[in-house]
Image: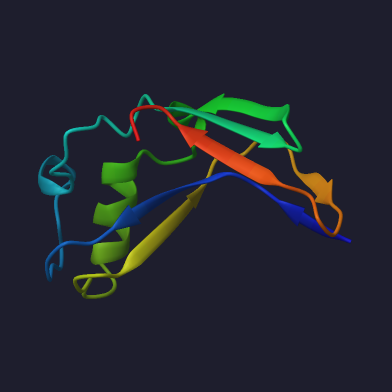
Length: 100
C-alpha cells in the first residue's frame, strides 16, 4: 500500500544563508494563499489552502537558511497537512495549484 499527499514545493534561485522572511520570496505568486486540489482517478480527494501549513513559505525558507546554505536548484518540500489517501497501482493522481 502506498499513499500520497499534495505538497507545495519551493525552488531556490540563488545561493543564500540567514535569509530574513522579508527577502525570502521573489515571485509573481503569493504562496501564503494558494488553493491546492488533488484528484485520484478524477475524484477530488483534497482541497486545502497553503495558509494551512505550519509555517508559511517565507518563514520556512528563513528557518532552513539559518542552518544550511541554500544553493540554486535546491528544492524545499512543505506538506499541506490534511488527508492521506491510499493509492493502487495504475491510479492517476492530479495536483492543481492555483495560479500555476
